[in-house]
Length: 55
Image 1 (cartoon, rainbow, N blue to C red):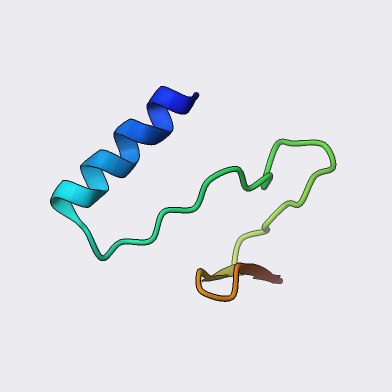
Image 2 (spheres, one colour):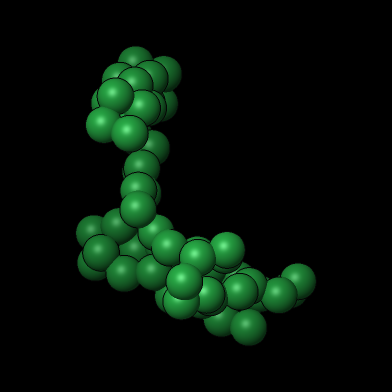
């Protein structure tokens, strides 16, 4: 898992250095579950370290 994360960060650093990477978000088929129905939106606020799900 650590190697995969580092590979993603290296690739983003090379090809898309301004792109935000978000890891370890339990969303979907996890326990507890947070399901996003069709039409729902997710807002990722990187600097605020906040993820908001709106249905």
